[in-house]
Image (cartoon, rainbow, N blue to C red):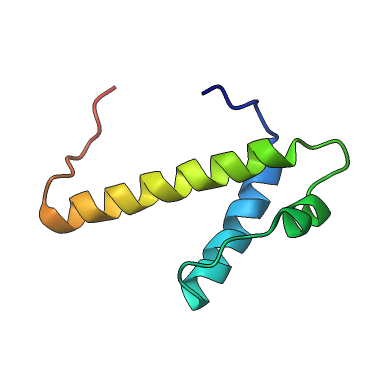
Length: 77
């Protein structure tokens, strides 16, 4: 699935709010309306939401691998 590019500042803002909310209330998801209010007019809110979702999955996977010793540093390119 191709996700359209989004402005890095929009993604950062959405990720920070998502991280703060899930820290205090695990399992909570940001609503579309909240994301739409946070983003600049014309922003593809679905793309921002998808990228936040992907980022959350990557972070959880990295934490799990680090906890089990499967995560290697540095990450080879």
